[in-house]
Length: 142
Image 1 (cartoon, rainbow, N blue to C red):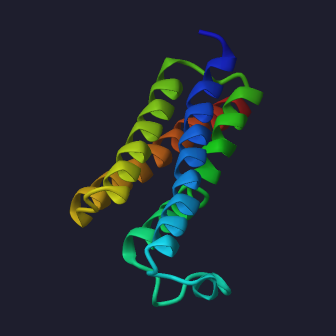
Image 2: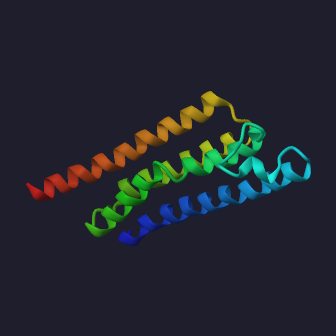
């Protein structure tokens, strides 16, 4: 396994983020053509008039820009410090898979407990990646 392997889950998460981003204008235009919203409903974000299905895409996109910043950072840190191995790559893929499942649930059936489960577990996986990285850096520094 090469150190560059860590970039594959990063690319997958970036692809997921762009896919979810594409849902925002699609859902907004669909709602506008159906007469459910006006351009003014988006003047300062999203007004209370915006249907939930339209707001969900934007909210999921924001989720993919928040905590995943720490994912991208630790992946780059693992690469730079030559600490990429099967464990870290598998954890990274686990994080991406859980975030993908979170997005699928969020943008479809939106079952809150299922969505929360995927979200929470993904956060623990991300913490695990950081713990592995910290232990390796701590061990190298000792």
